[in-house]
Length: 123
Image (cartoon, rainbow, N blue to C red; front, side, top):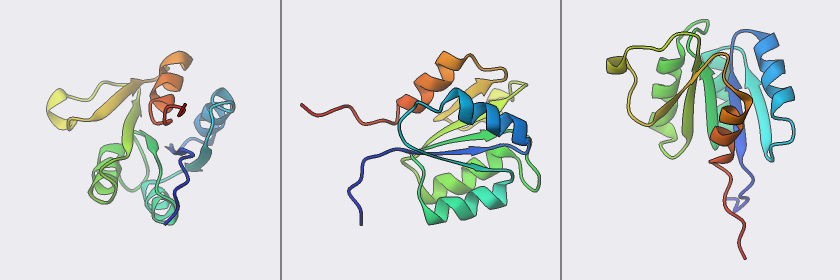
């Protein structure tokens, strides 16, 4: 078991342009960043390396973002989850503890969400 405290981020969106834009926008945020274009791919990636933060699009091929987050939360309850969407889902379908990030999400909001998983410096 590793004691590495470097955060790991997993971005999930079927649109490669969205993923590329997220990577560019957040290139200076410390941590390991990975991208998946489907829920199934994201589940495999999370098994290989548990992410500190997941940002998933609501619309994905195969399963929607909420279903993906539900599956990940069973295995990784301490991971932070964000749902990146153009429409606000009904309050009754979004479980507590999931941050809604409306597209287009202001860059400072995305950065703040990601940085919330970075451990505070010791000293």
